[in-house]
Length: 171
Image 1: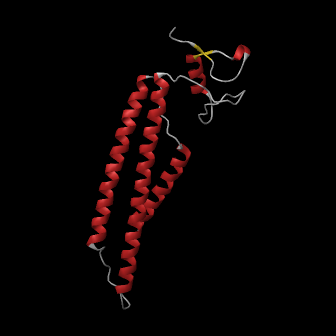
Image 2: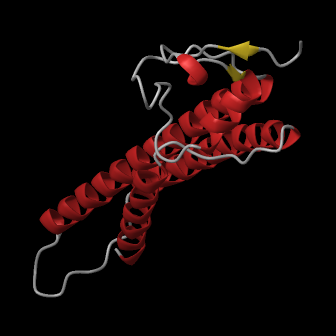
Image 3: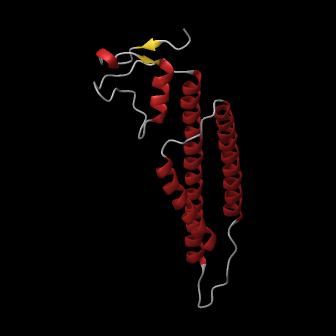
């Protein structure tokens, strides 16, 4: 048959066999982290993943990896820019003498580094957005939503980055 009965764990009796699609639906509906162990006997589940489940797992992983990589690279660029701006300020403060210092423009190297960082961030964003769009489209074909791994931590990282960018702009 197309939906065979399977024995996914070490449970016995009336709990031993379940339809594969029922097991997949149960795994998808479970709250909390994805855990492929039986709640009763604590053995690993032997499951045959459906096409939709495989697509959901791979899409979630790829989209999460792309977003986390882009966020990490953007955080690196932000820290790098902050370091360049601070170094330029320290050099400028060391050169300025007298009572009325004249304002100095940032060095061309700092401006070029800022432009390079902005271009790199654009590339990271486009890369992440393309992967997210492909993953979302693939999951919509099996009527499943796209979720990201570590969404709460990702939200905190984004808030910190936004605050850092605001501080750099106010500099």
